[in-house]
Length: 456
Ligand SMILES: [Ca+2]
Ligand SMILES: [Ca+2]
Ligand SMILES: [Ca+2]
Ligand SMILES: [Ca+2]
Image (cartoon, rainbow, N blue to C red; front, side):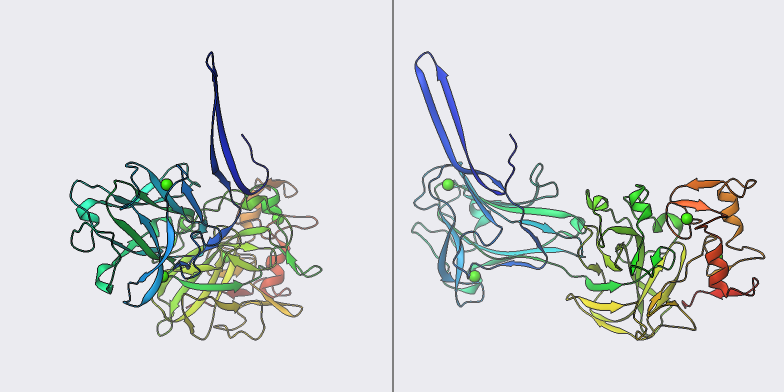
């Protein structure tokens, strides 16, 4: 069964035998949603809707289910909350679910799920339950984050009349670490399980990001084309961009929860100005001691310079306390650059544009100027902190080695440091070769000149 358009679909089962035909229809059993949310996702029931935008309700028996009611809230003040009324709903075993939209945690770090619940047990044998689960594959598999039933679910003393919370201390706050899902897309569901007990309440359902969010822009000189203002995406077009970030394997230092980032399925198929050029490495550095790396994140770079998370669109987040940091951007075969000033970073996104001539950067000639913008210096085929065209540990010879070492006109296809212009083919001589940009970037006229990366 394939659904071609988003929406809510009924499911009908028809059984036919010698005695006739019987039909059962479940209304709105299948939902095909394209709505995607990002952290912070906050649902507090104040809009009086049972299902906020993008959420859905699973009510298999079509009878009693979650409702939106007025009640004394977790702060002691009047509020709206979700309620399922097991006092009057006599259908033990029935499960009713509130299901979030798909939440992208790409661009989140240290993610947490928070919610309040309130419940008065009817008695130990009335096993009304609340189960909270998360799925990282759109509901194919669920992992339990919280479960309690009967007395253990209670937030107040047992009683036998229909109940509503009347004070703040009758609500229980849950604050659950879901950072294991950072970088992924998840769905969370809150399931009430009926055992004809008493009323169960939910409120303040939140998925929050704790990372320092950055909206970065940068251009790499190798693939940058001044004619259209974009970087080429030859690596992507040749299916050469790895799905897992390359920086850990190359020996870049990782800090906090950086490293191991994986591109979401389908991202490398996107074309146009937001197509992916390559992975880059972003660092938060101590403002007082900028040689100290506080947090790292491997991120994806779009053709127009936007630095984005694993989903190919979101700004990135690095796991560090709120504070003032220098920001460094690095690439596997370009020279990195770092801001000369600290930025006060928070969980709200801070924009920093490394293509801007106006941005203060550490050091002397930290970047190349191309027309009216900045690019990171290309040519670091022998990965160290220098560009060298000749002499020991130069960046030119590895290109000749990469194409076979003996026939200069030979070429090699692949994801290689020696592919200076990042078109997918390593080339030592001829049009569009990877050697000439090194000579240009060390100064052009004196081949023995050396250019140093301006990172502390
Ligand atoms: Ca509320
Ligand atoms: Ca129901
Ligand atoms: Ca080098
Ligand atoms: Ca090339």
